[in-house]
Image (cartoon, rainbow, N blue to C red):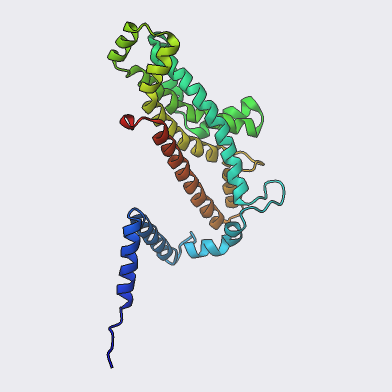
Length: 278
């Protein structure tokens, strides 16, 4: 009777990993890194005296939030989907406004030396103020949580857009300007055919930095503003109730959403910028 050698479990596992690595070469390293991080985190949580729960305990404590993110019991008692959606809506409004104002002011500062000298010290001063420092000013001026949160996002996100746009405009090669003079381009033609295409890589750099700062700012703003639906206030309320597992779960969601926002801006950039400017 002929017997065939059995493939060992290790061989099967190696074959599966090889096939996965062949089809998804960029997938193996992050999965391995995440697995190692979770194992180390779990081991540290088992150390006597550890105060933070491990990943197993987090899942056990928050499985309702994980598997039922769409529940809505009224008020601020909503699932994580609605909390994140509310925060994203605020980010979308303020980020759009910051992009419009930032690009406009950046072009003005970049094309006008007098305006650049006059406004640059003010911009450099204000851009260093952290988001949390703007919260009491916004609340004192606007008297309501919602507009105050929108203002904090706006004032945080505008600076990288403005500064990068101004730098991009100033970096337009002189040859381009000479060609515009030779061809006697109108202001409109110069704006759309030379200025915007040349400054676009810098503008997208500012937009990509700003989307991350806007997401950070809304979390900071919501944490100290009571009574509003949002992932920031959710974290603060969970901490007040000593639900550390809920805080950790919310932090994971925040990180995932921030990563997706950055990837989205990168994807838009690749679709709009010409191949030679990427």
